[in-house]
Length: 269
Ligand code: BTN
Image 1 (tube, rainbow, N blue to C red):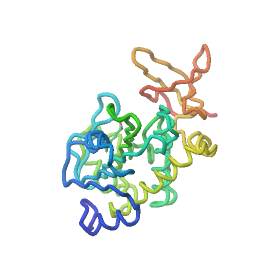
Image 2: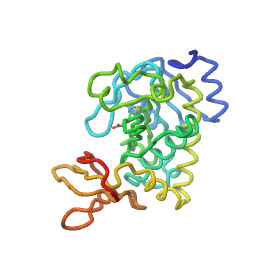
Image 3: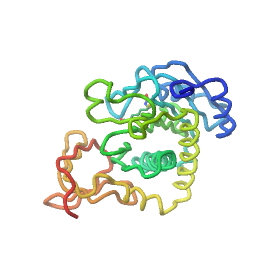
Image 4: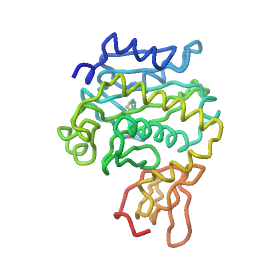
């Protein structure tokens, strides 16, 4: 399918018109759109929001020291925004969760009826497998801006990915059985992203309700690793501050950062 693995000049023009984004950078291939976005954010006069897009990302970065695997047909892009557009502060998990909701809304529009969930704090899952990773960063020299990086498995084959990815990931094409136009997907996600961040900035109370509803960890026994500290217990969802609620034998802990491992399937809540 034309436009399923790369962006034509026509696709880029359509994205410009549909998103009205004042800055669009497109690369046939780049190491990491987030790394490029962090550099670009240092240009004070850069018109925002800026969209950095590639056909193929070769050294994608994930949270911590994780990498992000991509192949032709995957959608990898970053958006540079003024921090004021996302509530003025860097709210730890709240921004990533809001971006996650924007991705969920986009996927539900593209493929209604998807079995979709948020894995706190920054992943989107479909049918129990990871379809999207989100990396929110503050450029060290331009802390008045944020970079939102999104890796979305659209037309790539996760089944043919390296073993660790193949065992846990899925793409939209693998779910739907047909390919999607990348330009249409990125346009939809970008528009949902700006709408959702605007909702965060005006303290829209439906956002916490939605991340609580979509929390796929609720009712499961989880381990949250934060540095050297491990919190183990039953997850009770995500509160309005974006913290993951974990009931340990001693108390209900509010985890604000960390890597989650699911220890058991859902309990009968
Ligand atoms: C994670 O799962 O830990 C987050 C993965 C984020 C990947 C995206 S792809 C576009 C952008 N550029 C990167 O190098 N990373 C993000």
